[in-house]
Amino acid sequence: MGQGQFLGSSCFLRAWFFINVMVLSRSALAQSCSKSLQFQNGDRKSFASCVDLSVQGAKLAWSLDPVNNTLSVAFSGSAPSSSGWVGWGLNPTKPQMVGTSSFIAFSTSNGTHLLPYNLTAATQQGSPLITGPIDYTVLEKDVEISGLNVSIYVKLILPSNQTLLNHVWNRGSSVVNFEPQPHSLSQNDLLGAKQIDMSSGAVTSSGNSHQHLKNRHGVINAVAWGILLPLGVMSARYMRPFSDAAWFYAHISFQCTGYTLGVAGWATGLKLGSYSEGVVHHKHRSVGITLFALATLQVMALLLRPKKEHKIRKYWNIYHHTIGYSLILLGILNIFFGFDLLVPQKKWRHAYYGVLGSLGGITLVLEIATWIIYFRSDKEPSGKPYGETIYSAGGVANGHDTRRSNADV
Image (cartoon, one colour):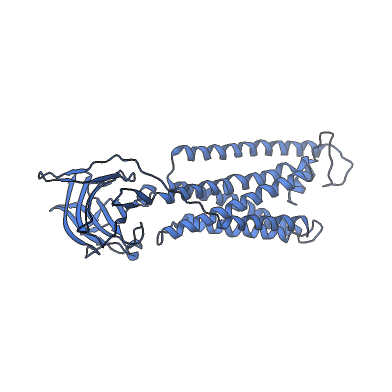
């Protein structure tokens, strides 16, 4: 097996080893909430427990009656606009949108409303959300809307011995003919789900737990596609004049490590997709699939690389370079698509701006230096045929050879 074939196989082995490595985290919540709810008509509700849900500034207070299997809940949140809506509900199977029996509050010209809605897969796909019966028996319900602040009160009957409940909530900016319109897809509006033990108050699972995986997905892919692959190309282009071997091993090491991490990032993306059925970020997803496919073809091309003397080597070089530069451009583009979806703190976006600026600056300096060497060497008679390697005392290759040899990467 040749050097290229061996290293290509190594890339595949390392990449597929990481495909099944997934890390999920759990998070705890601080208690910063109120155990009472005051209505404008003077009615006051008191509760035994409460929790700050942390997402969208929402809070939940409740009292559980295990004898009668009833749950009294006060959910407090804020609408994004005066014409918007706020909703809370329970999902009997998972802390997710689809399958949730919800209560959605909003204001119209004829007053405030708190109506029941079933959230289905069709709803997630964009079908109109129409009020209708839900899966729980409701004993009492009320709503308080003051400006953008919304408080929902519901008392309902739970199934026997069911205290571990999946809470789901969200908000939207408009309501049309009593049909709440879709909420935004920003990070903060995709995390409204937590599993809470209503008897102990313990948050045993959180919709925010997937955020850790999202963060890892973003970091892994930014390092793989946005840092390591560009470094691999730079090592091939600018290290070769100084060493016949070091540039090749540096190039392969950067590219194989980048591909391996890229596979791990691709796998985390698939896992995240399974957590949000029906939600498709088309641009990010399409570019990600294209990246993975092209990167895999690039590794396969390494396995099939012809010898330098072969007549089709120049065509292989064109293919290899075209795919390589395309991967860098698409990778950087998709990183910014990811920033738009994750909406991280500005320091992370600025940090990547700094990385790109550094890589770009180094590339510019090395490119200028390479051309200077080329023109200086071109003016000096070498006594050697065009394209043959000529090393000075400092070990710098003739500029002709530098330009010609780069095509053999």
